[in-house]
Length: 316
Image (cartoon, rainbow, N blue to C red; front, side):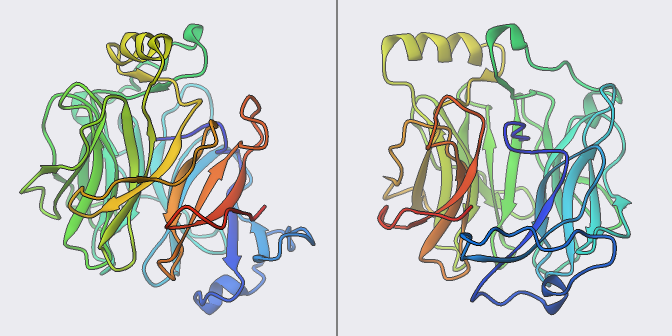
């Protein structure tokens, strides 16, 4: 789902020091900005802005590191659609249907398919926005289902067709499994299934939200974000919101579990909005976004933490 707290109007291309990326990601690109890394950001180099209009969010690399897939919209009356572009911010191409609202796109590792969630089967119009009279909330649109398509957007195939929100999906490195978040049980939980949509298995079953899952590079673990209400007031607020498919994401923590759902471990206990976790290529660390310096604020930075919950380090 789209996390508008930190998804600004621009995308930044970040290259890790000491981690190999395709050479194209390490060269200055025409049209992109100069290096935006700050002197104290020792893990980063060649940070460049590559989008300059509209709202661009949730960008992910292709397996060969030559393309990005992301969601974009421009204007208050338009919905996010899925696009691809190269690492210079050029050759932008619409690859979703252009109908309804889309989110959470991802490349299959073989480069032959893409994955995303869309509401287009329920109608071409944008679904209703969240009810912000209740504060900052996410809308878990029940019309969202998972689809795959060819990289040019053709050959769209539906993977899920159950009542309730199905989104936040990503693919294992070997391309055999998809992990995603679903509200089909009445509570947002994490599920895994085969790449063709079969053999669906529920992995989490805790009251509250579990979502945003990603596989580790070896496919043996899953990192995710979760918001489990603890106090009676939190439980009441959560239940009232989830009845309308909404969620208050102001306190999220980072968790890891084995790929079969066992050995769940909470990595952060910041009492902040920590989310967007992703495994570092070495499989030993996780990068995530958080406002842990000021949990009431909207300034988010990137952090690294080891998979055992130690070694928290600020990146930006």
